[in-house]
Length: 440
Image: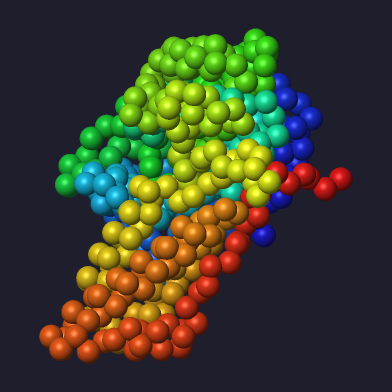
């Protein structure tokens, strides 16, 4: 049984300035390594050594014992991360995907489990991404209610250019040194950061960025932005604001809300300067300041236009109205995500329509639609979800007809098949009504 790490979390919460000088033994613990192995997805692609989880597990106890000994003697050396590029949904660009070796995944899981106990005590409430017990829907809910129920009139939407590839490793180690005093843990993290990247059979050094694909990368990224942005906003910038000011971050995607335009402009200016200090820069095409809130529509109409919108976590936020005509923050699936998801579904149909029977195709399509609804079926987004459902049906009818020149797959046959697989209806999965009040 893996060691109980909650004592570390309790100490971190009670002693906010405490440096942890003796935690490496938790990482090398055999039970901890075994639990880390169990958490690995067996279907994931192997790393540069081509060893799968199943192969490693054939002599698991021997392998883990050997790994534990190498970690204790500091002779463990992470292997380079294999990098491949996969299509980015809704774009012609490709997204880098890192694939660590199975043994490196085990070590990263064990290390993350320990560090998480410390930093979950430190992270601010403004950070939502890749944290246990915190979700995208919580971020959306808190953001919606903040704009709805506070005096918010301006929103700054921001995105960091190539964040994961441009994290400055020297600054990251300085940040880690604020809480981690165990030199063996710090040396292990440096080795992981410096393990290198293999592309097309060639290995190159990794002098900046964090290795994507492993479980440690999101945590290290959160730690970096915790010190670079989160604490700066909470402890310095916000204190200098005369009006309302709130900040929300999910990984490297974040935004800030303000009551007064001059404070929103100051944030945009000082935030860029703050990021430059830590070797990061803003993506101009995804960074903007807009008027948004209860007075945005009135002011836009005076100018002869419409109130602006912003995108966050796959949803377009816009100024709507309640049934009684009052202002209400509303959200719909962003056009970019809508098109990307349909394109992804079309590509899947094109490749698989002749490989499986109709019933199997419809069952898989059902799972894909249900997955979409599980995320996007939120308050005020029923119409877009219904439209997505209809577009999937239209694509199914079109592509299944292409299996035969006779075009014999009618709408009636499709409807019968969808009834047979119990095609999902659009039901609200997440109540994110920004007008609701929290129960006492």
